[in-house]
Length: 423
Image 1 (cartoon, rainbow, N blue to C red):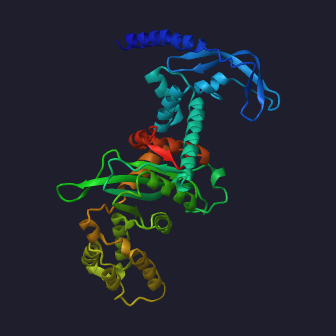
Image 2: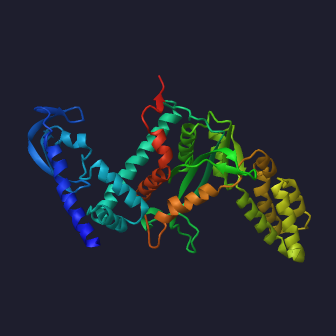
Image 3: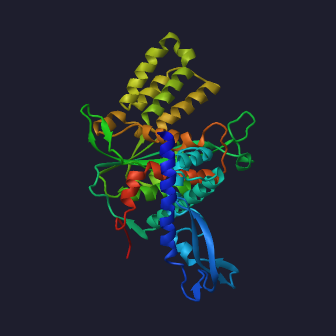
């Protein structure tokens, strides 16, 4: 049965391959003796030339008019641009399939997946080139759109229906890079060299209800992802644009959640000054466990009891109680400096650790959604064994992954007439 299915599919594809060929042959792409070249000159008609393009049913030969610009010293075919195959042999439909396959796994596996499921034969190298080009174009388009939004040249319409709460959760994770990409950069390795580059990731999602136990529930299919290797100053503009696009100026409650890193709060304060800021509760508890280990030589057998009391203080947002309980010990020198550094994390973030009040307001207090994003959107694809990326290649694939993870929301917000330009 399996063999019969393969034979039937091959026959159907071969039969169907002639249909797009006939449709394309109906318009040879002749647009007069001269056409604009795109650089302010005119290109002159030369002759008709063939181009083989790989469509979903199979390879198709496109016979179209060819023009040449003497000033630019390059040729062009208007029909290629009209069909979306200028500079490539993959049409938009197959490109979309290729993007999904390449975003899901290694390029060689993606090529095999396309052949097994769609009967399309592409080399791993072609899969890679097409996916990187597509991802780079998507990343550029997203950054251009963000620039227009932050400059108020593009005004997104408010979401409808309007959610009650909008969250922006921010984090960063390392991506293994080639030696050339990390040359001269300091890192955490034993030799002091960097082997990764940090990609910054933000997830926006909405919340409109609580569960039966009073815990917040994330709205289904409401998450949208953005990521970049750019510095925090550039990433901040992307976060601002995405927040604006998701309705940050219209929701009743806007909340920014992070792990306590200073660059996250700098972005939150500068871009969303009216937002509630929350330190992820899990990270805060990790720091409290570290503090207990740091004081273990003083606590002795009372360590577990002391830690349990401090965790209770943390749940109620009593940062003063935590600091007071830690400073009763007569430390000096290096030990005192280490304690001051550990307590500085809590003192500097005290307003962001009012967990009892946050729970009363029905707010999320954890960054699990972005932690999961770091593992699924970034890690599962870009941190497999033996992988080492160039920044451009990783950035392109991350753009595809973010779009795929945001597919439901993107389908809504990119529908025509859902955004408007300022007058």
